[in-house]
Length: 107
Length: 113
Image (tube, rainbow over all chains, first blue to last red; front, side):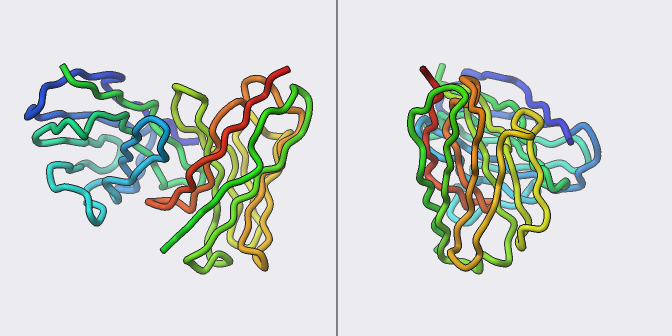
C-alpha cells in the first residue's frame, strides 16, 4: 500500500492567516490526490481533487498543488468556518490511503 | 444526486458479528467500485474494504482480513460489510463511499461487553 504522511499534525492560526499543509506519498502517485475537510460528527467533504482542482462550490481561498510525491494544500485567508481537520488521500492505487490528518484551530 | 445511506450499526459484544448495509441511489451503481471506510472516534480515516463494480475483486485492510467480508447486490443497489469476530478496536464510525465527494453519513459500531 502507498503510505501518506502529513505535516503538521496540528496547527493554530488566526483569522486572515495563510495556512499551508503538506502531504507526502511513499511513491509516485502522479496527481491522484484528494484533499478533504472534516468537521466533528460529519463525513469528510471533498475540497480538492486531482491535486489542484477545486471541487464545485468550494471557496477559492482553498487551493492545492504538487505532483509525484509532494503536495501542498493552502488556505489563503483563514475563516472561522475553516476550523476542521484536513486529510489528504491518494487514489493512484486501488487501495485508497489517507494521510493522518492535520487539525486546524484558531489561535 | 448521489445518496449513500448506511444502516446496521449498533452495540455488539466482542466476538460477535454484525452486518452493515449501504443503499445507493442517484448513479449507475453497477458501474462503480464501492468502499467501506472507518474512523475510530477522535482518529483518522482508514479504508477497510473495497469491492469492484461487478464484485469480482475485493480487497481488505490487514486489520480486518479474514474477519470482514464485503459484498454487493447490484439488483438492489446495495453494498454490505459483514463483520465477524468483532474486537473492541473495531469500534468506529463506518462510512460507505463511492469515492471523491460521495460519502454516506456513517453508522456507529460499538464493540463492548
